[in-house]
Length: 340
Ligand code: PEP
Ligand code: MN
Image (cartoon, rainbow, N blue to C red):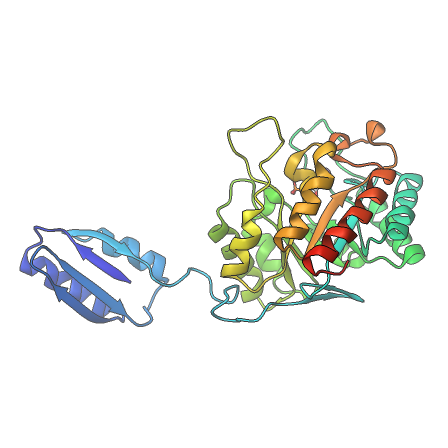
């Protein structure tokens, strides 16, 4: 931590700060300038460093305390320079390949799910998505089929061989969702549900952590840290768009987050252009862009009949659109040296 003293700090005030830093377990390296004093505090403090920085800033004559180390460790590139790989059955997320996770936003019926699962599998998807417990902004909209939806996902997996990703919304449902899911999805609204993060951190099941709709990348990586710190290293991130002033699109899909995560972390990152744009017309092009920018995979909503969908129809692409998109993605993959 670097502590910058105010220009008019008195000698005694500087001594007080130095003493406090030493009490917190730091070794101090002060620079007594002509304008002001700056103190480099080196070492591991006895308490959480962000908390210590707050405390230091509350001392008299301190202008600011700047943290040098990132507030996450296990999720960082410094801790693990090589990219992580999350294995889901035969599917590798984070390797050289590109993983397509596709299916309906929400499981609505056996026919809807099975038709979609067969079609996306035939077109080249390697993971089936489908919500059974749905976090809904409106309490009046469809909340999902619950365990019946999970059973249908298991049935679709049995027939197609595709592993299944589905959302777990709260700690009371973890056991139930784990019984059926191959990947636990933590939704944007739950990225900061720390109780949930701690509990999934105790599992050995792969987790996809979506970015909170207003979360900074640092906060997102701190959320991932909760899971890894608990012992579950099978974490992948999912950029699904953030809330901005723009309303033409449902969210603003932040593709630069893929690059930021690459620089800061070893965790695989998947992009969800369905929630990211909210518009089916934009999904294929944003999928191509996500592949080109270097994402490890995609999470895409596909529906046999989007206009009849109980949820997220406007952003769900049709089966023919998905088939066409897979062909285009193969061409982009070829151009950028990635295999689908
Ligand atoms: C979804 O994938 O359908 C979903 C609800 O995602 P998010 O949590 O990103 O809104
Ligand atoms: Mn959805």
